[in-house]
Length: 326
Image (cartoon, rainbow, N blue to C red; front, side, top):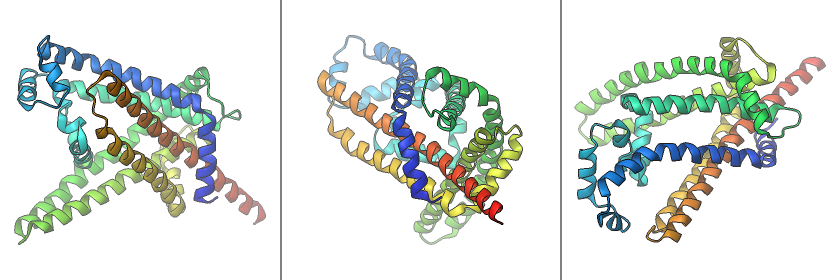
């Protein structure tokens, strides 16, 4: 099976399950609302009934912002939501840097707990999504979704533990080792460009390895669902073999869908700043645009699973046909 056939069939399957899109969007909104309560409480305490609220609708007041951060400096939750992490292009590069260097391990306990809850939800939802896509009906129901999620949760959690070991090797062995080399070379180089170029190469290699590990465990999940596998070490080993045996097609499909996600992100980033949120109508418009973008991200994630499932099953079918012919 080719990349584009797997992708086109995957998109058709995703588009048949629009109810699943909106279900995941509603869950995302509910989770976001829960997270906004502490931030809302802090903002209400800081702004109160003053005119600062009206001034902030016209732009960020940095003097107020500095005072706000100082007042809530003991809250790791509030400090996490700094402007540099959640607003503008600076937030994107800040989060990329945290991902590449592993600095998210330095977050406070509240953020780490929230990250753990997020991971557990993703494990549950991954089982539901793959179960729906692999079921004969391929039809989304909430009961079926959570039934599949519960069925595969234990096995997917074990896959998460195994993947955590590989990510740990990358972050605690590979990153410090390569960073040390870059610092030594940069310290003796005549130009800062050398360190900058080496840092860029390191970031590209790190992203490639992170995406590779993520893709391998996508196929480990797919193998578990398709073959009802019980041993996650065995499924991980077979997923590694599958990925490298079909390296061009697995990587091509993965990066093609990834490019679609980047295109959606660029469109959102260009349009969103143009919506000046100075009136209730414009605030509502910005909110709607954000949810459209979230739907696009959900669509991309579902397309990853659906298309990779198609590619795996198609190549397995081709393998059986060739073995039978032989």
